[in-house]
Every structure is written in C-alpha cells, then in structure tokens.
Length: 137
Image (cartoon, rainbow, N blue to C red):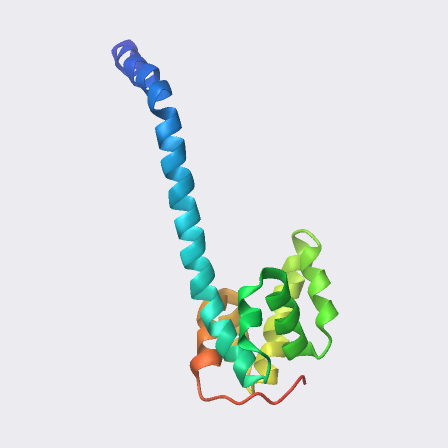
C-alpha cells in the first residue's frame, strides 16, 4: 500500500507541469462538443419552425428558439419563463411542452413519452416526419 502511494508521487509532480496543456485541450474539446450538439439540436427545430410557418433561422438563436417553440406548442410564448425556475420548473416545462407540442402536430401519448425521454429524437421525428402542424391545442 505504501509502495503504491510512493509510485504515485511522481505522477502528481508531473501533472502540475502539464495542467495548462490539458486544460486548454479540454476547453477546445468542450467547445467543439457544444457546437456539434447545438447544430444537431437546431436542425430539427428549423424543420419544425418551417412546418409551423415561422422563419427557420429562429432555431439558431438560443432563447428565441425556446420562445418560438413554446409559441408553436401553446399559442402563448411566454410559458417558456417556466423553464427559468430551477429544477422543478424546468421539469414541469419539459413535460408541459412535450404534451402541447405532440398535440400541435397531431401525435399522441407515444410522442409525448419520446419528447420527454429523448427530446432531440422526438424533434427529428416531428421535423422530418409526415405530420402537419395543426396549431396549438
């Protein structure tokens, strides 16, 4: 046990020397991962907005896309303020938006479950599927 601890001492000494390199690599990797995730989530939103008759570039603006998605689903976009309430508010908003969005495109309970559990995949199904926008229900 003592020998294992003594073997780890040089690792701690050298890790301090490499820390700035590792940190900058982690930052760059995180930024790239964020951009990929953002593009993957904005593409189906563009298609959903096109189906609803809203300009598709709104999907690329962070807060505006949530407002417009809420407006498509509920008719009143200001319900997105529920998402700003920590923990419980965001969970309630996710469930509320899933129910309203699936009804607005003519889907039922299966789509509600998909939107709650795998939101991005649900957006792809709505955006690239054959459903038509029926308006807020």
